[in-house]
Length: 179
Image (cartoon, rainbow, N blue to C red; front, side):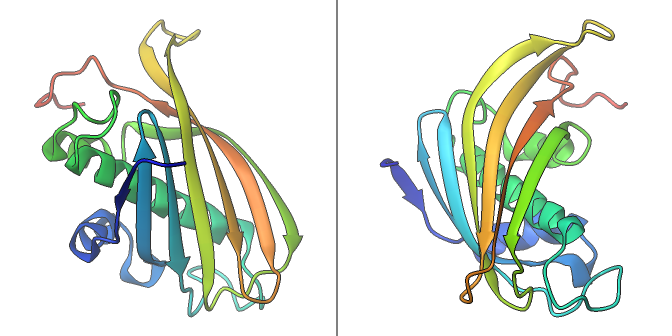
């Protein structure tokens, strides 16, 4: 993908990860590349110790999900900050902070683990494909569906990958509205 490249922004990353407990802030840096509605990001992670289980010696699915979320949140924050793309280019940073946790939902996550990854230092890649406007079959509420993918690897051949479908809900709610 060619397009605009946004190097790691440690100040923004710190703000994005503020919603995580300090011992769960795994993403150390992330570079984002965007072209139109598509974006990709590559980052570095470090997990000195698991946030919930004794050491297994390898990256596990719970931590992969956390890493995925951190890449996702930082990528969207970068797109919003730099006003990139039709979907996130119209958001303000205030809107992003308000919507980051309650309105960006994983609706499906599929992952494969090929070889164990050393959690002490590894790398991740996130890709954002296109989006579709949809309507909930449950209540008729509008939402935006996003198809994304990720992969993680380490220097010793460890590898996992997956696809994630997201929903961005609450678009019709005014900026200052309370749930």
